[in-house]
Length: 303
Image (cartoon, rainbow, N blue to C red):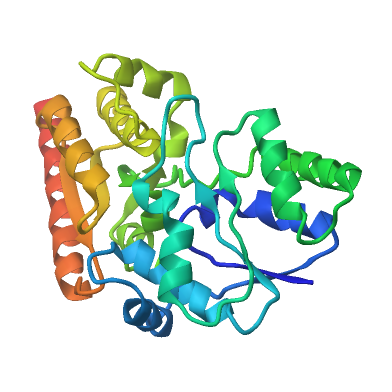
């Protein structure tokens, strides 16, 4: 049996778990290619106009897989922590994809309600049921997948550059070089290193979130806010670039919260959609890096 896995949305975080789980059950894994112009065009064709760029790309990836596998994994993340929730687009992902794209194979769409052991096994039993009904084998595959997932989180932490910029935002914007126009390479070529939220301790994130008047119930909102504020206070980077999908409701709130808290710490928002021009993005990135370099020189002269 061939299981197709789109390289979109939370793939960069959970791909080790997903591929290991189904391989341990005896399935063959077919991963979609990296995002490219053809996949984006296909996604734009199938997806509604109002959706964000990562959602459109996910449609293109699913469409690429539809005639090449026996089933497609469509992760329906609803909640990965107690009393916290994921973007509403994730909750309805299966309905959107299945109604937008014709002639799809069977979809593995069991909801992930939390990462507790009990709930995760419920997911594994249902999702793995398309390959085998042997619960002992499913439990063993789940255990192996969890072991391999631990410590496999993505993350950038460049140490060989005199200046560093923190990239903050949804991981599918940060780790998809097509969506972000290879921003890490561009910054490195400008002599600037890149760090991401993975360098921030979870306890520090929770500490900053706890200071808010009301704790956001979106998991991603908490992570983005807590990591950006911690980075600014600890000087873990010299500036922050927030990669935001156009029309993202969560981003519109989080960006305001961050700007209100970090004061004059260098901060730039780079909006991304299918119409974002690379030349314009390059100009903004270069201007931001030049500003950081001047700020650093002035700081050295004053000291």
